Length: 156
Image 1 (spheres, one colour):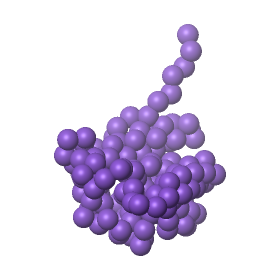
Image 2 (cartoon, helix red, strand yellow; image 1 turned 180 degrees about the vertical axis):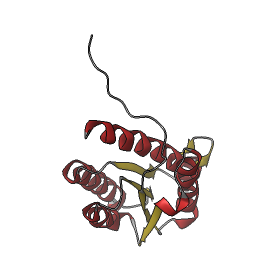
Image 3 (cartoon, one colour; image 1 turned 45 degrees about the vertical axis):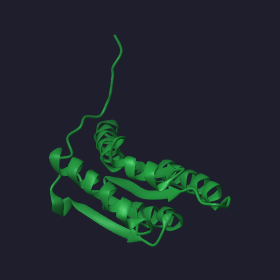
């Protein structure tokens, strides 16, 4: 028989950082609400949650890098919203931010959860921030808790 190691969904005793973009704040505030709601429901204390606000999605990887380097957080949640406009800026930014966040997660040995909405319209973004399509902040928090608890088991 083989061994199975997996995380669980209990945030108790862990510290979490949330890096969030202020751009599209009316949507991102709903993502933040969802993430904090999940973390506290799953046992995290509010004093163990730190929110770092940056101007836009481009600045998120820089904040995550510094947050991971401090070793203060067991896991970091990345939240933001990118909405397609009339130029190719959306494509460039969404691809680069996703790539940089992924690289930081792997290279920092700190779990990082990706909760950035990429949508074709404001309506789609709103739908993914707490209406018809659920709340991607809540989902990102659930993912980070599972990864944090998995890392804790793997490091033993």
